[in-house]
Image 1 (cartoon, rainbow, N blue to C red):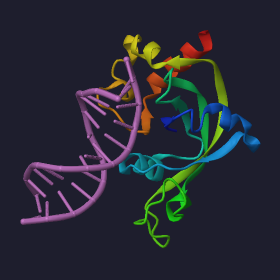
Image 2 (image 1 turned 30 degrees about the vertical axis):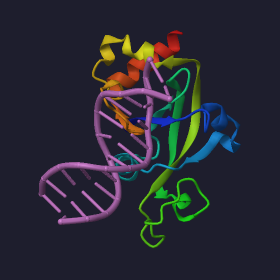
Image 3 (image 1 turned 120 degrees about the vertical axis):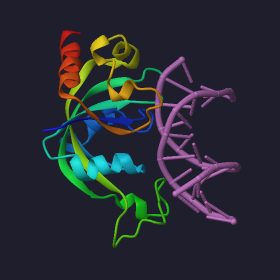
Length: 155
DNA sequence: GCCAACGTTGGC
DNA sequence: GCCAACGTTGGC
C-alpha cells in the first residue's frame, strides 16, 4: 500500500468539486508530465490513499484524503483537439497519458497549509517541500503521512 | 506579475 | 548526445 500527494488548482478543480460528484468519485485527468505519469501508471494501486493538495491559490495546502479506486487507464482528453490537454502525439492505439479514478475519503476541517507543513521539523525531508519541486503527483512516506493525518485529527 | 527551477523541443 | 531556447509550475 502506497501513499501519494496529488495537486490540483482549486479554481479549476477543488476538493469541493469532487465532493459533489456522484459517489464522490471522478477521474484525475490532464497529467502531462512523464514522471507523474509513471507514478500513476506503474506504482499507483487500487486502495492506495492520497492527499488532495490545492496549488496555485491563496492558501496552498492539503485539503483532504482521497482513495485510488481505479488504476491507470488511457487519458482520452489527450485525443480531443477541443480539450485543453489535447496532445497530437498521443496515439489512441498507443496512448501516451494515463489517468486514475479517485474517491473522496475525508475533507479536513481546515486546509493544512504549506506554511503549516514547513513548520514541522518531522516533515523537513518531505518531497513536496524540497526546493524546485514541481511534480503534480508524488509519493509520500508512511511516517510523513501518519504525521500529517495526526495534525489533521488534532485541529 | 515576477522569477526560480525544472522539463521539453529541436537544430546540430 | 549536447545544449540553447522556450514553456510550465507554483509560491510569493
